[in-house]
Image (cartoon, rainbow, N blue to C red):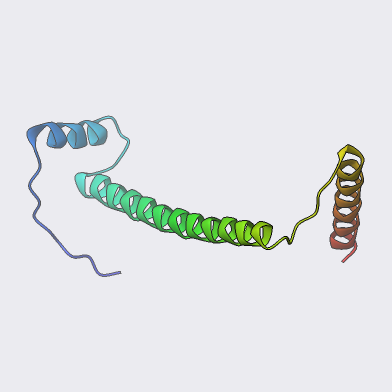
Length: 103
């Protein structure tokens, strides 16, 4: 990969911090420190984007759930009904796990 050189300005505190990381052996040189910092910034930005997309998806699902309730598309459960539903979900999960292990 081609390398592009850049000239950057840092506060004395930042420069001391970077030099200390190199001196302690955490990095081999100043450029390595900066590259690692930029990679971490890129990862953090990608994570923020993923989190925002997930939040948008969840908000959409919540809105759909509210519309379903308002339209009467829901089921009421008593204690026994919830127990039956939980048992059905467990059985379904067990069957899926068995199929995935077999296949």
